Length: 253
Image (cartoon, rainbow, N blue to C red; front, side, top):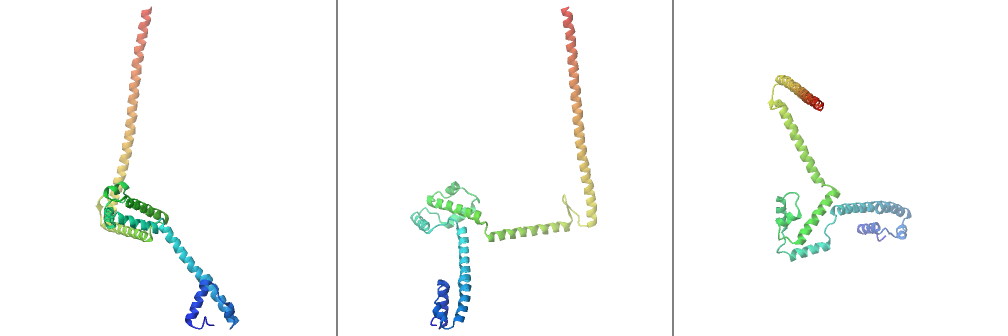
């Protein structure tokens, strides 16, 4: 066959069959039917149906991932418009380096008013573009999450912090730190100090309970005194009313 006479022609024919999924069966089977049929049944399902579809699936999957991460990015028309406005308003257009350095020194969350106050000569188109891109970046993070590199950095920072805390705790343990500013290196002395601190905490606990009981008892005593005073007042008031009633009766008689 002329199509398989040389190595270059064979590669070109195989590539053509893989792309177009068409071949001339009469020409292939004219020389040897069995060999041609075996080759066709091996090459077509393996390369055309399996490998090519896998490649297309990988490409489409990557495209969907990139499209999802990109979000509402700038199109070609908007990019041309951006370049046009940047060139037209180049006298008042804020340079990217200046913008980046100034915004980096500002708080992490800034408003549009603060941005206008920082760059009073910034064109409205550039300000609106920055706001749109900021919203687009926020939507991307909400949709796709944080980048894997940033996540790895956060995990590494947390791991380093935990290791430092464990080292500090072990160092404090070796120094015999027992809280309340006490450091007892000797193990035997630490046991004695433990007993002393335990007895002190127990005494403080009982003192607090005693104070609560004394406060409750004092409240009861104050309540009894108030009740006695009220009873005395009522008794004095009742006697005065009785005397006045007798005088009224005598006068009437």
